[in-house]
Length: 471
Image (cartoon, rainbow, N blue to C red; front, side):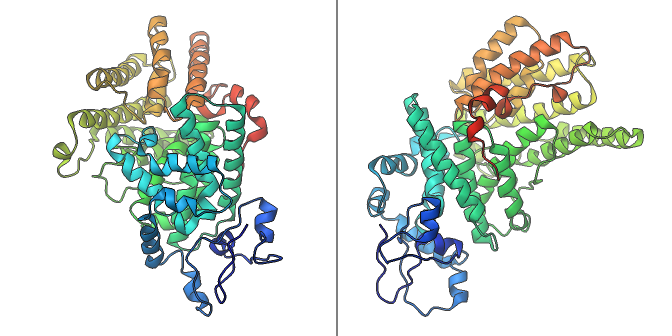
């Protein structure tokens, strides 16, 4: 049921209003044609405005500072009270949204340190009042993932609900117009929640979501036209896409250049300034796999040497007051995360130049250093380092000793993102297959393996083949 608009106010529902689409309905209390067709809740919860405002004023609704101020003002109201005013929201859906928006402890998995949980929660609640119809399903899908992680249990009904909301969020994402920075920010917020929900629920299709969001918002990202808060969103989307591009030897969408490298990112800590190097490694790997010209290959190997030289010299830029503001345990984790991403980049450079069986001793050194860094940090802090799935997998591939391989498999659940048990399981399967293949195939390169890690394992695709998402 739609809230009946007051006399003289605009009557477009929030979804059509946000998407700048015509809102047709049979009566003021019925769902509009668009929401009926997409099976979406049709509501008007935004502040109503008197008729007669100029079209230019309406067009700038998302992009103006007044929208941001209105959102923040509405968020001052307790989130549970705000949710109670939303019609057609079930009790279960309210409870799910309260988990995401009202319990910062639920956000322990996607951030690098507990101190960022509250900021992560505010980044979700801030844009919600002004964009409720657009964000609703992505938030519900993500909240469903977080609830499953908290309880440790999931049912077929839970899985079906997460997939249903994720599918609806995908429709919303494809429908968004991206013509100004605020619309780009909304796209990144929606895409971020959707990517993490899909990453946590099934793993398949994450790269497609990241690619789409980064593609359509790229002009605003590169022009530095977005709110600095969006850099946290962009960093995760870039990393998730880069992981799959590294595996499949594809070119990533965006070469991210952090505007302020000397910051602590909520997800990637001190590693932001390494992301351009990982982007370049993916591009070179793609070119190596698709080129046979000797002179071209020579240029690519020279570029690899240049990346190696830069990464060898790289050190994380620490913000002013870093050691004062962060606890000893947090400093240990952030520096360990930075070191293992640096070591993994060097290991990738090495394996793009040398297949297994060639120069293995250097690869063994870097692999052992990654594993030792992770293990020692966990031993001293009693907590595993977060957001280190990529360097952990890159280092794990190099392990040869059977006893060490058993130990690595025992550590998968600690170092592959705890947000996504399905990817943890897939990683264990991938490593077992790759180790077997490496042991029997001379001059082996896991970049060219028939087996691929994480989000594209056959076991996952077979299980969820009916639920793959496309952009």
